[in-house]
Amino acid sequence: MNTKKEWVLPNLKEAQKRTKQQVLIQRALFEVPEAARNCGLNKKFYLRTYGCQANERDGETMAGILVQLGFTQTEDEEEADVIILNTCAVRKNAEDKVLGELGQLKRLKVENPNLILGLCGCMAQEEEIVKLLLEKYRYVDLIFGTHNIHRLPSLLLQAMSGKERVVEVYSKEGDVVENLPTKRFGKIKAWVNIMYGCDKFCTYCIVPYTRGKERSRTIEDIVQEVEELKEQGFKEVTLLGQNVNAYGKDLYGERKFAELMRKVALTGIERVRFTTSHPWDFTEEMVDVIAEYDNIMPFIHLPVQSGNTEMLKIMGRRYTSEDYKKLFDYIVKKIPNCVFSTDIIVGFPNETEEQFEDTLKMVDYCKYDNAYTFIYSPREGTPAAKMEDNVPFEVKQRRLQILNEKVAGYAHERNEKYIGKILKVLVDGPSKKNDQVYSGYSEENKLVNFTADHVECGDIVEVEITEARSWTLNGKKIDRN
Ligand code: 5AD
Ligand code: SF4
Image 1 (cartoon, rainbow, N blue to C red):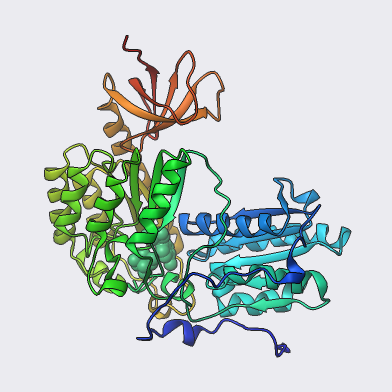
Image 2 (cartoon, rainbow, N blue to C red; image 1 turned 90 degrees about the vertical axis):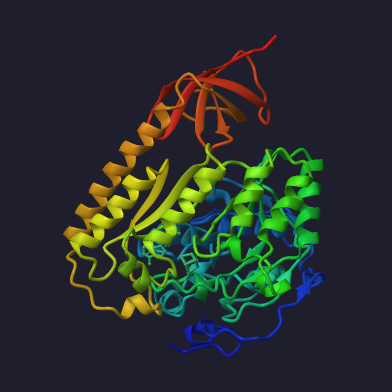
């Protein structure tokens, strides 16, 4: 492959390094070059986001930038002038989906050579993937990474005006860039980044390489954003980070998530959520703050990954199964109505039947309301990818199936306890499957479908639960006159 001089390609070795270099909070890094102003007038963009909430939030920033350039958003890729795939690299099947989509999009590119096809997000940070794109997907015009979204106007302009492909992926995370335009996709619920990156280096995970080192935004910037959202009529914010418990360590020299949550709760916004928490540095103070404020929701996503201490050690998770149970018990003691979800990986290299059974026992212990379960997927450049594996794929599939059946059983059992109870539901609108009913989420993060004479999106209503399914609750709105 000939690499062009002006291409900035991802480099795995660089991405693996962590420097002591101080991260700056950049407030004026974003600019639109004169020539790019209005480059999107009478043009449409189509944006497709894969993966986690951090990606969703990045998508809102890209949409904000594109709207500022004059583009309008379309949900129909056939009529787009610019298509951007905002990708996920956490497992191979996420990548395969994107490569499949790229294959489909080739036709549009043939029909309309002026179409700009862009790829960004975590896959763009991977050295091997970018090599593949440059060799086999030559019709991709623009590749940029997670650290230089603020450069989108210049990069897009270059792609639109030149005959060359544009590739700019920084391997080292940059600074924290504030004041980027944003087009929020919702009107009631908003994502709020509190930090970027991850320094945990779980041995299976690619995120520390694709999203760089942990970088916190300031408490003042976050609180101001929440206040503005509240003023605009938003009812709920979700504080986002790969590992929110570590918030503040890099910026203030100590963990400050509890303090941040308190300040966010004091803005008076109706609902505060957060994700994701690592069980390792989940402090008692954090639990106490969640218990203290009514507007911090009693729902915690607490990824366990495995129920076996030896496996957790090889995964680099830094807690034992006993530590996890202790934390779980402490939270339940302090917040008795707390609802838990988790992430679990089965079929990690050399996982024995006994080790897998420990995971099942953990599920029996916690009786999670929900669990996201995955078959281990080797990721280039991670320590686990170098481990030899003696577990056949069929065994991994069987374990996943057994696990999923157990999870669904407890989810249903947990949901049945709500029958006859009254939950406060933030209305999203008419249900997707049946417009005769409304749907929304309860404080405990339960998806509730309910009947009502008339409610508005964004109302918080009381719903009596009449029926429980594994993943949803059904009910009817109650009127107190
Ligand atoms: N294989 C399978 N699952 C993974 N996850 C992260 N990396 C991998 C991998 N290589 C899962 C973890 C994590 C969730 C976001 O994705 O369970 O918590
Ligand atoms: Fe990946 Fe572990 Fe960081 Fe989560 S905490 S993003 S699983 S390295």
